[in-house]
Amino acid sequence: MAGPVYRACKQCNFLTEMDTCPRCGGQTSKEWQGFVAVIDFEKSEIAAKMGITANGRYALKVR
Image (cartoon, helix red, strand yellow):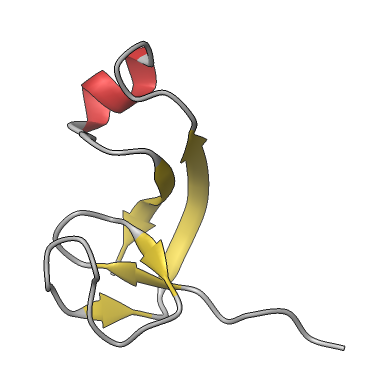
């Protein structure tokens, strides 16, 4: 049984199953690599470096 097919937003890198990003309304792509799960963006150094301002899953690279 296959799991959900995630798409990454081309603007904010947020991972979603939708064709448009629910966070910023940007276009999504099936072409992405790696991801980071942000649990507490206020304390996360990685979130700060990536410019992430909300918890969730984010792609590291989007084409």
